[in-house]
Image (cartoon, rainbow, N blue to C red; front, side):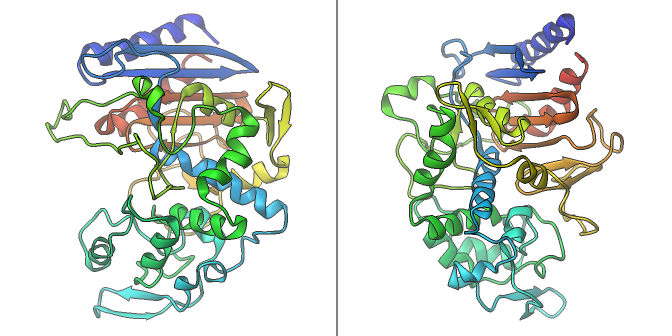
Length: 379
């Protein structure tokens, strides 16, 4: 990779800090078996100490690929068939009905949502960000409350109407949180313990978990109190104590180095350096290829979360075209982000992955375009 372009990447992030758009950031680029960039810019928190490369960040939805990989590990063991209905594990999801806006009534779902539907966000669920009859029911049922366990989330969400018939639409949703409840049923343990045993401990991801211990809270990155462009208040999850809700869809805290360990396994198609830096195999290479293939086919996409030129696999967006969208990338590359301002992508054809961690929710969409352009410029 071109060293001048990598320096320009660092300088561009620093300029965004200097312009008051970001408190600070950590960037990491790994290419052809070597970390070619590992840089921290700005401050850990507004007016605080300098950002460090090992700072802790709330990674929100970058939790999803880790939980999704665990589901596929169970698939490999014959313990979690992806075609099995969600209701097999979570009885509250039996007999689901679909909301019909035209008549303001519900009708029986033509088929049950499956585990694959959870993994690819085609289960008919929502995040309830927008106004509407079903989102109002989500809010009334306190879906997503951090004071509820995964089992309690499933019990509250299962009886609510679906926004689409299962398998008919892609809509970003609480599906991965429901998947977390399924994992707990299959494994008979808490999600945090499952992730530690299956992924975090084998890979030596010592700084990744659902909360930050008191002794490590000085390393936690924080956002501006108000968005520098809109003035809207910014509030992120309180991660100072173990939450009741261990969200598979958005609960983890991690570092660039830890997440790089996970992505090295993904880039290695299931095998990568473990806790002692000796190779460890989490899944077979065909399973990673399956996870990072486009599972949507001709299923329509609802909303603007997926950019043009992208489909969706099992926990990750999958690039299907070199063009169509506003930033460079290779067909077959895959990626996802977190709502507080974290981004990653993996490009197997270029033997490349890159991570950007900030705590600036209002900059997420812009950074998701900027960062790949800066990284690909260095090839």
